[in-house]
Image (tube, rainbow, N blue to C red; front, side, top):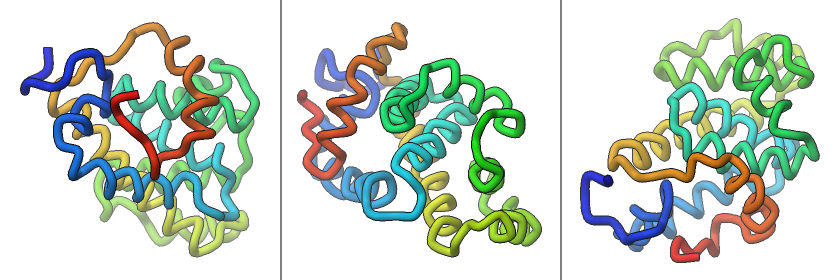
Length: 182
């Protein structure tokens, strides 16, 4: 049961967003820019960064919601997403994305954990300043989103197919015009 009286039947972040709709628009606009705007990092890679941070934060709702969307964009199965979460260094992703996930994981621990060496390695592997910037901001934002969801003790469907089945619609709808009631 949620810590506060949230609207019934709205899992994860949807309940708190429906509870306080004034916060919904700016939070979703940030997610839209970070995860869907034009960028040299694919939408799938950016959703994978959000998924990985949500996994590190043990936020079941967010890691599965964004994992489903990453799966949709990357045209992969859930076992691929799980492989990245469990062992990014041996997952079948690019060395550049591995380096960016390392930076993201450092942000998750605390911003000062990001090292000059991590950034230099990512740049050596082809990461641009914009990609590094957005990786850091995605990681920081998802720490906030994860804490928002879990700090209010929201409920999340435990059947992972719930998230996979909704991923295509979520990917097509985007975040900027998202209505938490639907």
